[in-house]
View 1 (cartoon, rainbow, N blue to C red):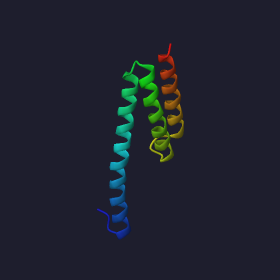
View 2 (spheres, rainbow, N blue to C red):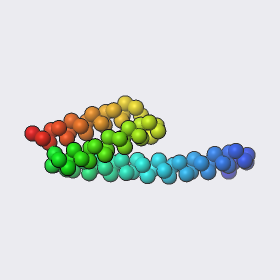
View 3 (spheres, one colour):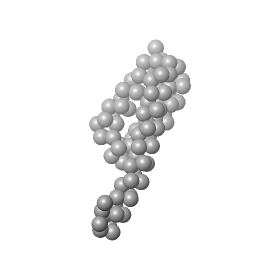
View 4 (tube, rainbow, N blue to C red):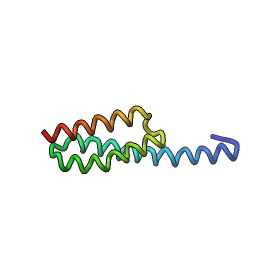
Length: 85
């Protein structure tokens, strides 16, 4: 247990942010799984348009490494384009 007042506040802040980050990551994973289960180009395209900013926001807030976010966006875009054929 932290002894200093600033350490107590930091621990409380960490706990709050952990819950927020966990929720964002969970939402992201769910959306990714949903996108990969779609076989319709139109529906997948609409979902991709909402998923890309979410991935970028997570990358910006360091929930995902920069290259991981770029790789996911690239792969999902390629997947949606492949559905058009």
